[in-house]
Length: 593
Ligand code: GCB
Image (cartoon, rainbow, N blue to C red; front, top):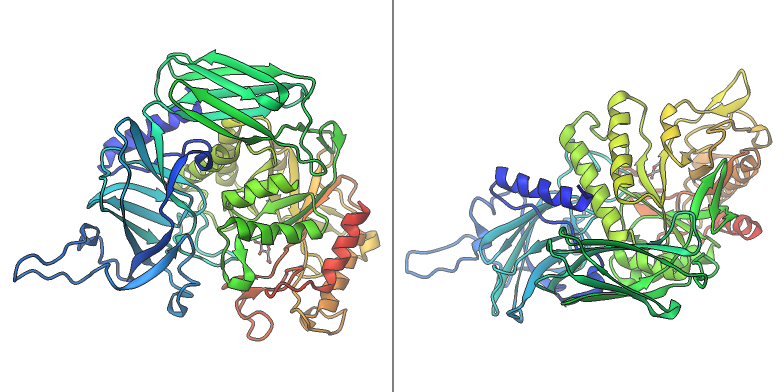
């Protein structure tokens, strides 16, 4: 069974068991469809004690007789922007963790032959959706999209859409009880009403062959199990093929062309690709490139590559809120470009599609991961299922993005049988959908072996990965055991290694002792960078670095009253957008590579 078919069967089965419907995985390329935006001001009710569902406030009742009254109303109350987090919209909501109801009215052009889907780019963290008084779907996971078919539930005039959003941290959630970023809640990404024909092109996967530079593999899946002609065209390459879907509505083909100009950070070529069926038609820009690992090297289009990466959270520090728009993506990515990067590690969860799509146009390789971030309940089967679902939702959304080079399966996990089984299941899911990308995970287990005078790591699980990534905070969380020029590594020999995090905190504008960590000064941070850059010369299989982190970011982990004030200050750029001294060192390093 194909992964998508399996997933649909599973959700149908779950629907039978539970009387509510689970939201569905989204169709490919929602942004290329016929959509009506439902973004804007929504009415909102803060429901700290979770009374709304019991009182059925999604019915939006109004008193009709003399004896009626309702202790709620969505009218003339709080209004919140969608998309956005709620935390940044009212001082009282800064630390809010709980339930908030969102609601709005909308009209919908009802077309007899079409189907309608509600699409949510992301709702953080869990939600239930109610349309015209009925629950129509639920979703868990704050960073991946979902859709719900509403063809039969929608009216032409005055639909009432209510969304019950909850961001309470829970042990069985992903991420779990504590994580080093802000727990933003709300409808944080676009909301659309998507209109499709009865039988539509639900999915397609069009990428260059893993190893061949002149072969494009394509698969298409219709929304129904019908046999139809489907045409795939790349006009600029004069490629066009019509194939017939099988009884499952699926078709596969490949194209051969010597004219393909491969995508790379230095030359991010994208081609218009059109997919059409009897009744549907979708198009978008797709790029083609090869990436593989051989020995200790990572090859991009047949050439070994060094990854000049940086991480950022999905946050605009100057606005103290989640990033959600194309303009936000421009701000974040321009700063990465200025630093001389050719790659972004999207920390620590799938970020919005504007960022992913713009990154690809600007020529960044991407590492995307789900928030398996310390403290995950690896023994819990339902947590494992959730992780698998998140992984699938992330890959299905971005599998056609040429920039996507790494699927990240975990960050800082400790070896144990349940951890191994959990992560292995994520790798299996990944490979069942996409075998063209590299699989990685970040580890924080590298230690200095005093006898051998060398840095080592003992986690056999790394063999399951294409590229091993190490977070190591020498000079910050770990004092230097030897001077950087003697800091030799013997970690993941025979495999490529990336330093996926290193750094330390500095308050922008603070001068101080360059040898004293607690000076919180730019000078100390600069020393720390200098030393780490020196050490990198002694990691034989080093194929990339990704300092932590591009911008200072908000986190309740960080409560030092004067130096942090709820900010993680490891940014190379301050919360106000100013570059710290270490930025220039990193820039010089990347320019020299
Ligand atoms: C880490 C985490 C990252 C934190 C960072 C820090 O190892 O992966 O999410 O923010 O350290 O600043 O401590």
